[in-house]
Length: 370
Image 1 (tube, helix red, strand yellow):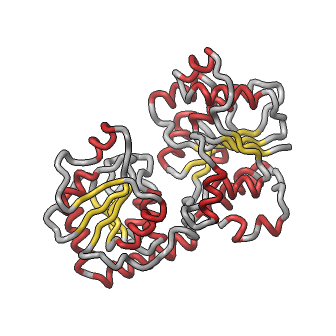
Image 2: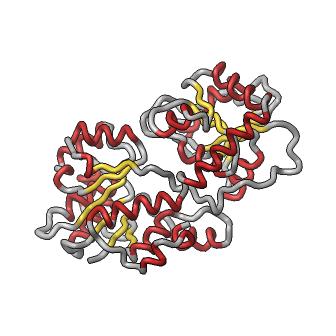
């Protein structure tokens, strides 16, 4: 029996490992997971693409994803376990590897299947009978898979955590040259910086955003045509991003209405740095944390509500400090890379009665999966 981890998109794991060990960036979940499982990691891009791969990629994934799936289909065995980090690679893997006489166990992380291409691929490739387990962090994906594919509860798992590396994202001192209160933010997925700009343009604050993309349309959707004089955005490397969180009096995560839990990564990284968070209300984990008073929630696309929430925290430092501490404690206890990997390991091993390939003391070690 072998474990395989298939990535999408591809990334330089060796470079990530080197830089993480040097404290220059957070670690990658796959590094920890592959070590504990003794898994072989496969990435798309190295295999010859055939015309049939290009044809299938019009439905889901990319041609190189289907090429990799063909490669794996001739070497897997019935007792093997394949974990795919997204549906764009998972559906090709399940389609080709499950067509063999001996089918492996296939686990796929679901990001956003509830869209036209996802729906078509799920039905066309008979995914319900080929993927053993879906895992996700979004309750909307859980509901969709139950409703659309009629999957039983044991075949869809919502991970009760987030892969925040708290050995990297942690509290620290603000920059000495900071002149006035600062609102920090980051990311581009479903981001609504237009509302943030409107809410803060007349406030005595600096608004700094970690966001960059060569895609001009993506930036245009996120940002207003006229950037206020107190707002700036650019690419931040990992250490700069960490300092951005530490410098922020408040981290604002403003998103358009969505069901994909957009903004989770930024929210939890800020909480790990013990910063108070204002976030757009959306269903799932975010709504739960808002209702628990751990983060401050605001209505979508409502600059007045956002402005009021920011001013409330800026004008009441004690309130902001208490909220930040509660968020920090929650991340340290639950929403971190260690608990995330533990939950995923459970699904890849105990769920299918499959043993870990590493010794039990390593599997129980916080250092091994921190």
